[in-house]
Amino acid sequence: MRDLNFHHLYYFWMVAKEGHLTRVAKQLHVSQSALSSQIRQLQDQLGHELFTREGRVLKLTEIGHVVLEYAESIFNLGSELLSLTESGDFLQLRRLRVGSVATLSRNFQENFLRPIISEPEIRLEIRSATLEELLELLRMHKLDVILSNRAVVSDSSATLQCQKIAEQRVCIVGPPGAAARKFQFPQDLASARLLLPGPSSEIRSQFDLLMGQLGVKVDVGAEVDDMAMLRLLARDSGALALVPEVVVQDELHSGTLETYWVLEDIVEHFYAITAERHFELLPLKALLKKSRGDVA
Image (cartoon, rainbow, N blue to C red; front, side, top):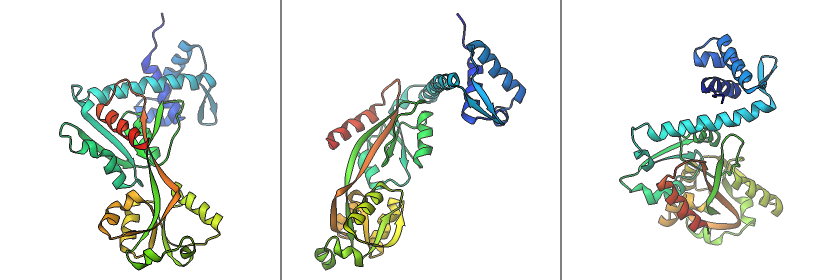
C-alpha cells in the first residue's frame, strides 16, 4: 500500500490556494526549485497532473480540484485538532469563539448570547470583521460560529451550515411626541429627513423597492452601514431612521425614541454559520437549540 506524503500534499495545498510558486516559496522559506520538486513527486505518486501553467500563474486541473478538496479537509481537520488541544486538555470545549459581522446590531448579539454570558465556566470570545474574513477563520477552526445578517451556502472546500436564528421587524423611529402620533405613511416620508442603512444592506434593498412601488422619493440625510452608529444618529439627530427594532430597543423602552411606523413587509434575518466538526460544543448547541425554538 502506498503511503501519502503529507509534506508534499501540504506544499501542493499552499500553492493551490496562492496560485504562485514564488510567493509560496518565500512564505515557506524554501527555494522555488525545491517546492516544484515536492509537487512533482506528489503528481508522480498520484499519477496525475495537478496544475497547468498560464503565464506565471498556476491553474488547477480537474484532478487538482479534487485533490484540493481532500487537502482542505485534511488540513482543516488538523487545525481543529490543534485548536481543541492547544491548552493541553479538552477544557476548550467550554470556550465559545464567536465571529460577528461588523455591521450587526450589538443588541442582537447580546440578546443571542445572554444565556451564556453569566456562565462562569464558559469563556466567551467575540471578534468582529467582514463576513469574508470571518468565514476564512471559521474554515480554519479559529471560530466556532459566525453571527450574520447575510446567509451563505456551502462550498466545495468546507461544509458550512447556515441556520436562521431570528428575524426582526423593521420600523421607522424618531423623536417622541406629537409628530410620532400624527405620522402618516407613506405620504409624510416625502417631507422627512431619513437615516438609512447603507446600499449593501438587505433592509435598504427592501425599503428602496417599497418606495419605488409607492412612488415616494425620500430625502436621505445619511447612509450608515454600522448599526451602532445608526442607533446613535437616530437618538441624537432628531431625524427619522429606518432600523430593525432590536437596534433601538433600549431607546424605545426608555422613551428616547418612538416608533412612527412598523414596516410589516420588511424584516431583517439573522443567521448562525458553523463549519462541520467532529465534536459538539455544548454552549453553542444550547444557544442554537434555543434559537430554533424562538424562530419557530
